[in-house]
Image (cartoon, rainbow, N blue to C red; front, side):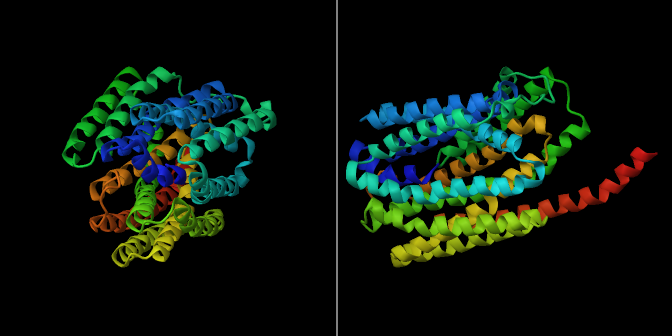
Length: 436
């Protein structure tokens, strides 16, 4: 969920006379379909070539964005946003696979930092440009601008990415997109449950869906050996950090948009200006993280991300209590720091656990953790304030949730440290066994 959509939600609610539930579905529908399509998209990248998938995704995403700008009813906008989410699912794994194929292994940490910095620039600065567009032409201008920019990027990618970088890696497993459908259905079911406020008890249904899909996949495919399970166990802490870090980031972006534009009655451009510290903080954190990960101190970056998350919970509480836009800007700066410290680190950690032939799968998993986190953050914000904008938000439980996210990130860092220690202890033993 980018900064631009957070920016225009209050304007959409007012212009379309939408209910809180309809506005929530404009966000959740996009993420729901994106989550369901990520694993098939990763498989397509591994089998058909990342460049081809990336260019197709860019063109289709541009078309869907243009259609979103032309509608005047939420009943049409919601399906179009879901379509947009499906095409967005194609872009994340294909872009990361292209990056991994093009950059030597020893430079991939730096490349991930540059990729994360580009994402941070879009995430933090798009509300500033979007605010100017909304002020001049209304909320539809944001979708038109996205359509044009995406189309241009697709043309540039088609012209500049060499064909040699799109050679298909040999998949480590003989599988097709159809094999991913049970997992996609399970992920979509779980995402739907998580995305609905006040239905926490239904999480058991989501767990049953996951269990059923897992049974189907294992029943129809050979059981994984111990060695093949090991990468999945290694990524559990990274997935936890991605989920709770992005839950806090997405939640803060939504809270700040409604707090500044509805509670304080300031303009969309004012919200954009408040996001500038977020971009600055994120950029600083990203390049600091690059040095930490290169020095094999990635857990320090994650700890700093957890600390930034706790700090943003305190800052957001202060801003809401005192009605201070400057403190809201400080809160967004902490969100930028959190993004910078964890985004590329999570992606790098997940992708390093898998072979190059599974790059599409690995990038899809990394993106999935962040998408589920955003969905969780949106659901929590939806329980604490009215997305229709008809009433002010004053439920301070939201800020407690942000603080809990920071604590969980810290616990995941501890788990990752334990996993790293055990892996280092086991490596000499495995080497000795191979030599004998």
